[in-house]
Amino acid sequence: MIQENSLLQMTELLLEYVEISDSRYKKVKESGEKGDFYNEVKPFADEVKSINDKWKEEAREWVSIHKPRNLYSQQIESASEHIEMVSIQAFFPETSRTRFINYVNSALYVLKQLIILLSDEKKGT
Image (cartoon, rainbow, N blue to C red; front, side):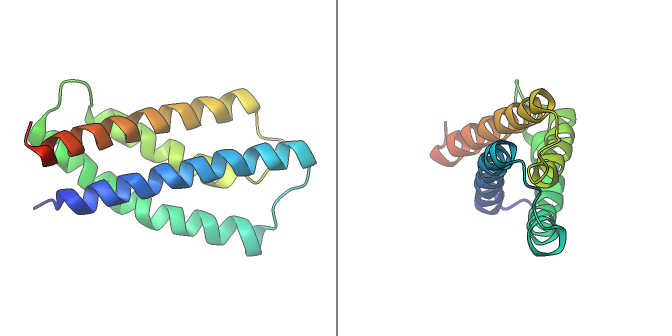
């Protein structure tokens, strides 16, 4: 049984992590300095991964049960991969700007769609 409040909270937290990654990337790209792997990159990426893995399972289950018109299991899978990638790549200035932005936008779209669907479900619409 999926706890929709829990799924909503995880989705909002991942949205925040993606936004943090995006702003981190902008700073790193500007300064040209890599993040310290053991003190910055790994702790952040591990934190994101622990939430992301649980979120992916619950979100895929929720999508398969509720079958929303504009959100599919494959999008959840892709968003999960993109979230994991940006949480690591945000620390490296050599990361392709275009690819990074595409991953961020793709992940944000899916997360925001899920938040809208879960919020509507909560309201009972």
